[in-house]
Image (cartoon, rainbow, N blue to C red; front, top):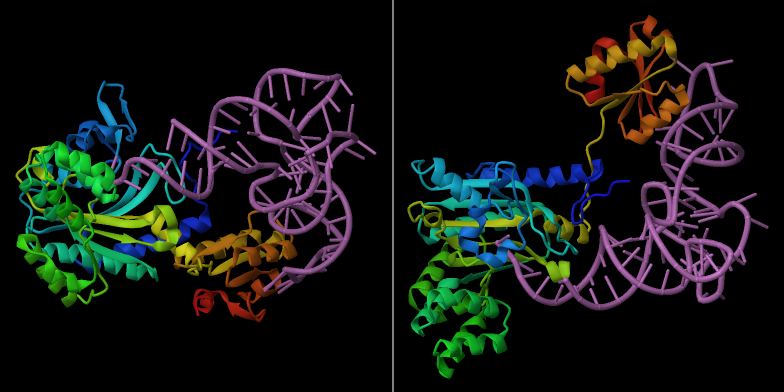
Length: 415
RNA sequence: GCCGGGGUAGGGUAGCCUGGUUAUCCUCGGGGACUGUGGAUCCCCAGACUCGGGUUCAAAUCCCGGUCCCGGCCCCA
């Protein structure tokens, strides 16, 4: 037997119905916010992902040389592709561009709960508007999506990476050294961050003030305490969020995020029920386009970990009922088999979901099968009824039966 | 990459510690009892010891390694 590769999954019909259901909710919410769907290649030139993210990222990318000697990588995320697409063919599109995508990504990592090597991300990007309105819109969409999915327990945290970046720059830490320090700070590894800061000549009081910043976390009352340009920006952002009706937002200046292309506002959504892998959504603002050779364009985006958020919904035990068949058509015997196909075909053309016996089953077994498919009605095709131009339909829940002329069958079944 | 726990028909399990008949039970699937009526019952059929090596007269059972799954660490764009 051939096994599935590690970290991948097969989705059976029941689960696929559930996934499509939630996927549609996300699409609908994105569209309702004026975003339009795009799709980019699942593989790209490896360079696209290494340009800004750095070499340690490469180890977790599925990359290979194709038959033409090109360095190709399965996408580990979609933001880079969307920005590439923007630079390649959308630079003169009216701004802001509001785009969303849904698709799988690949990372060579150790699989664990809520973490796979092939996983699905739903994300959105707003390109071209350098202001707090844009960040507010992105956060509003993320919040609306989580709400629409019905997740009950989640935390939305907003921070501003410009504050720590600015502080480090003021203390004389070179920009290219900031990334490593920020990573340590994100995880609150102060013991590891301190020596790095000292090595760049930062004094103890400077270190203290940086650490203090990472611990600024709480409610909106903190807004007044955050100074400088980022402080004004955050105040503006929160006013817009308030106007959007999003008030349950925490402030956490220690939120750094792993990628160093983020420059301004950063935000995350966590589902506490997920334990170690609880982050279900992450994003922020960045200026990625010039890294790929375009003009500097301000963008804000986020990605939802689709598998993870579905796992969270599962933990919260959200009920989901798949769609049922409208009817199951079964012949009473061999002599009406062909007629039952004619009837099924006709009902299908009329837009109903219809299944029909393919197993040459005896009627009682076929009825059992009809029950197993969950069809609302069984359409019993017998020669006696047919002689009157009719069939018997049976409501599978109540067991009630009635003789229905073929002409009115579709109507009777959709009632 | 590291640490720990696992893997017995499609799904769920007993057996494993203490090696020894045809590997347990439930469910699902196929057929029949039931020649025009389902989710009940009964009967029949089909279906498994994760893979490789070792120990042994004998391995599902003990030992080693691989693999996959689960939990955690590292990482997490």
